[in-house]
Length: 244
Figure (cartoon, rainbow, N blue to C red):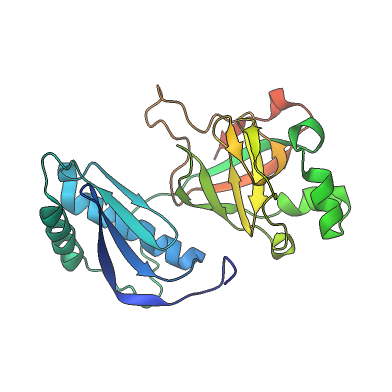
């Protein structure tokens, strides 16, 4: 089903071991913003419950990955620890839960659209039957929300892409080199490449914001729950990130 359509939410998370180094906690089928926010809340609660016992706790659209060191914690113990943590959580997974324990930040990314900065911009406007200026204005209209980070370190999957872009699918073949800072869409999703990498999403523009810097603490600029707006710029030197 299309991204953004409300899906089934399980009454209790479903735990599944992943080899000998992790446990996947599923909370439902499909993906929409409400479910991603539940996954985010669940991840924060599990992280708090397990503390240093877990190497990492990573939310996604409808699940949470809990990673362990297999040399210190057996697979059976991993599953038991996550199960105990989930049983202790006072979270109702069926109805919407508006209480969150994080403070989202609001970012504005300057973006240069089209031309050398967005190699798929003109073709995407043609495919969608839009004027280029209209498409640029439309993609800059929402305030997007970070669902989770994945694919590449610091890569944000953003909710909020207007429905008018739903038919803009992935490219038939990926590019071997997508520039860092590329703002891209595919199959109802929007994201920003934190570094140069291969990728098959449609490239609409580019920002100079540094989304991932290993020497920075934290290394990732964004975190789940943050908000992002795009603001058109003429020069890449002016296309940095501002936080409110």
